[in-house]
Amino acid sequence: MYQKIDVGDTNQYSLYLDAPLNQLGEYLDEKYGAKAHYLIITNTLVADLYADSLLEGLTQFRTDLITVPDSEEEKSLARISKLTEQALSCRADRDTIVLALGGGVIGDLAGFFASVYMRGIRYIHIPTTFLAQIDSSIGSKVAVNHSSGKNLLGAFYAPQLVWTDFDTLKTLPWEELQNGLAETIKHSMVSDFTLFEFIEQHVKDIKELNYELIKEVALRSIAVKVKIVNQDVKEKGLRVLLNLGHSFGHALETDEKYQGITHGQGVSVGLVAASHIACGRGLLTEAQLNRIINLLNEFDLPTTIEHRNPQDLLQHMTADKKNKAGTKILVLPVGIGNVALVSDCEDNEIISAWKKVMK
Ligand SMILES: NC(=O)c1ccc[n+]([C@@H]2O[C@H](COP(=O)([O-])OP(=O)(O)OC[C@H]3O[C@@H](n4cnc5c(N)ncnc54)[C@H](O)[C@@H]3O)[C@@H](O)[C@H]2O)c1
Image (cartoon, rainbow, N blue to C red; front, side, top):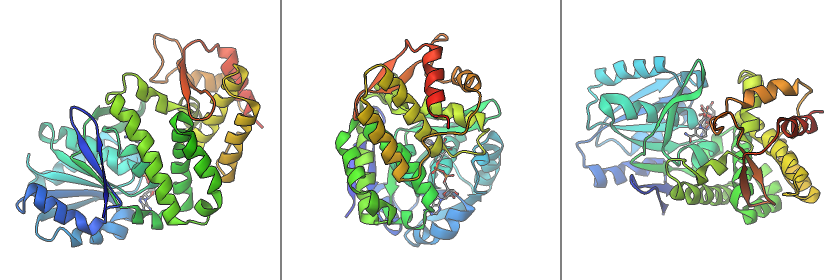
């Protein structure tokens, strides 16, 4: 039997966790009746793996399945336009409900499509990557990319519900699990030291793909995200703290033009760079810094990078969405399990942190 957790305030919705894909139909029947029309948006890879299980439970409804290529590049206005044509030819109307089946890319794309199609129709997240389950499906942020920046066009648009089947993780490649683990370690550093310790104690189980254990880590990570989102639904304050490591990570991703480094790898190096600054300011001890580096290393997440020009990286950080009136705003760890927002970081302090993560 699944677990149910409520998220949000004005547009409250629920996460159904450990909920089998083929049982979603039963739930929808009760909630929306048999006449509803469902538009499943997924990608080619996930469709091959999971469309049948999902459709197995939806036989009583009118359904249409749209698959898009498996790529971050599909988070685009061009794809939104194509989806609009396809939805119209499926006779999707204002009562249609979108089912976003896939990882964070599909969740962001299908969620954004739902937010604008006919001025907004309902959608449901069915996250199938670790990252999407613990992070991107929670918090109502949907977006597509623009040539000028990632996630530049988007909205806060709450789903009707999130239906999370942890069994889908069993087909996920290790490097995708790694990406999500970087975010989980970040969640633990932001607000749950006991989660950090739990991950440390179970490194071996996680690496050996003990899925019961991985589920436990996911549930605890989800609890952190929900706790913070519930206190700051529109990211006006507290939720910014979830960006720990991201100012540095995004700078690296930009420097690599999103090719040579995954988001999780960028976050991993970013957590270490932010920790170096915190250490210099006495917010974190050397022992805590080493503990963070060791845990990331245990999962083969990078904690250093090849030498490059730190000025370029600093420059990329000026475009960070958290910055205000030209001042760089950084999230820094305070011990493990707590963070602070700081606005008085000098450029030379940031450059010195970049140098410390360079080989
Ligand atoms: N909206 C938010 O709050 C938020 C938060 C974090 C990240 N994001 C976005 O999420 C995206 C990254 O998400 P992601 O890491 O899930 O990447 P992704 O969606 O690209 O999925 C990663 C890979 O795993 C495959 N996959 C998905 N489920 C699978 C499964 N069960 N088994 C095997 N393979 C599977 C996908 O086809 C893809 O190849 C980025 O676009 C990022 O901007 C959004």
